[in-house]
Amino acid sequence: MKVKYPKVKFDSKQRIYVTFYLNNKRYRLFNGKKINCEIYPNSFPIEKRLEMGSLLAAEVYKFITSGLSFNSLIIENSNQYCVDDVQYLTLALNNKLNGDYSLKYKSMLRFVHRSFIKEIKSKNITSKGVISFLNQYTSGVSYNTIKRHLNVLINEAVNLGMDGNPVEGIKSKKTKARLHKPYLNIKEILDEVKLFNANLYLCCLITYGCLLRPHREIRELTWCDFSDDLKYINLSGHRNKSGRNRIVPVPLYIRETLVKGDLNNNIFSNKPQPLNKDYFKTLWSRFKKQSNLIEQGQTLYSFRHSGAIEIFKRTGSLTKLQKAMGHSSINVSLTYLRGLEIAELKEEDMPMV
Image (cartoon, rainbow, N blue to C red; front, side, top):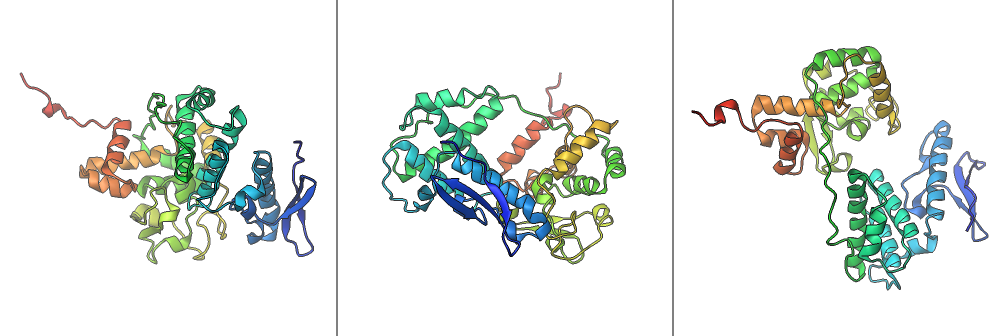
C-alpha cells in the first residue's frame, strides 16, 4: 500500500495538526495519542509548534507504514483472542506503549516491532525466524540490543496467550567492553570546555560533580529541581534511569557557577521547555574536533566515570558509590568499576617471597 507523507497544517486557532489519508479516509491528528506517541505540539508556544508538528508527522508516517492500524490500538483487553503470533506481538507492543516508560525505550520497541514483522515470512513466530532476523545485525552490540527488546515484546505476547517463547535458547553475542576512558587532567579539560561553551561547561561540571547523566537527567533540569540554597538536586523516579527518587548533593564549585532563574524554567534554555535531545551530543562533537586535550576513548560520559573513580578512591565504599551513581544494586557498581579498570588488588596483596 502506497502511503503519502502526512502534511502539517495550522487551523484557524493556530493549533497545529497532521493530516493524511488511509484507506481513502481522511484523518487529522492534533497529537500522538491515537498512535501511542507522547507528542503534543499544541502544548508548546506557537513558534515551536511547527517543529513539534513535523516530529508528529514523522511518527505518524512510521505508524501507518508499519502495518499497524488504528483499530489494533483499540484492543486493550488482555484476554483478547488473537489469531496468530503477529497479532499477539502487536498487542504486546500496544501494552508496552501504554506503560510508564521513556520515549526512547518506546521508540526502540516500535522500531524492533516494525522491523521484525516486515522481515518474517510467517504469521507464526519461530526460533528460526528470530535467528534469521537477528543475523542481519553483524555488530554484537546491535545484535544484543535488538534481541533484548524483541524478547521484551515476545515475553509480553506470551503473557497474553501466545504459545512458547521462540527467543529462549538464543544466546547473546559476546562483545568487547567499551571503555569510557577517565580524565586524569580533569581541571584542564574543564577549563578548555569553559572557553568553548558555557552550557556544555555546566553540563560537564554536573556530570562530574553530581554524577548525573548528561543527555536526559542534566539536560532536563529545571530550577525547581534544586533546593532553595542550591545545595541539592531532587530528581523523581520518572526523571532518571534507575526509576527511583534521587537526592544529589551539589558541590560548592558547581553552586558558584549557578545563577538561579524562574523555578519553572530549564537551567540551560531559560524556558519551560528543555533544549533538544541531541543538544549536548552535537556540542560535544564540535568541541572534540577542536580540542587539544581529548584522547581516544574519552567522551562526555567520561566525566561521570571520572567522578565515580574519585568517589571510590576517596571513600573505598561501594555502597556510597552505588548511591551516588543511582545504581539499582552493588553488582551494577562492581561492573561499572571493572569496566573502568579499577584494580581490586593492591601490590601489598600479592604473594611475597
